[in-house]
Amino acid sequence: MEPQGLQKTYVCLGSCQAVVTEDEYESGMTACNNESCSMKGEPLVRGKKSEVTGQNEKVEEQKEL
Image (tube, rainbow, N blue to C red; front, side, top):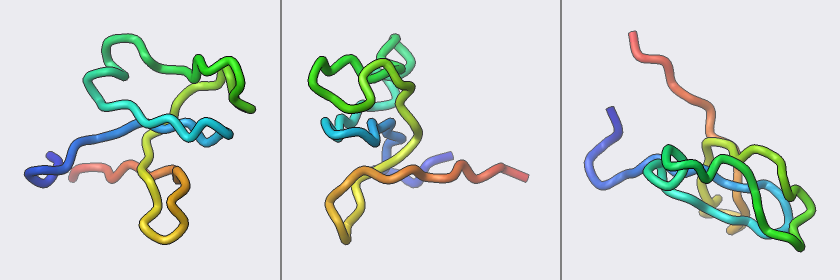
């Protein structure tokens, strides 16, 4: 379960740096569709914006015990 106030997001690691919510991802936004992105057509990954660099970064899923 996610901590209250935090929502899972999915990101593009390419040049567009798109971020979509879990709801958007589950409704079909699972790949980058930005024509000018260096990763157009590639799957989005579970991730977030880095507080240090401002760039998207992949987040490893934590398995529940």
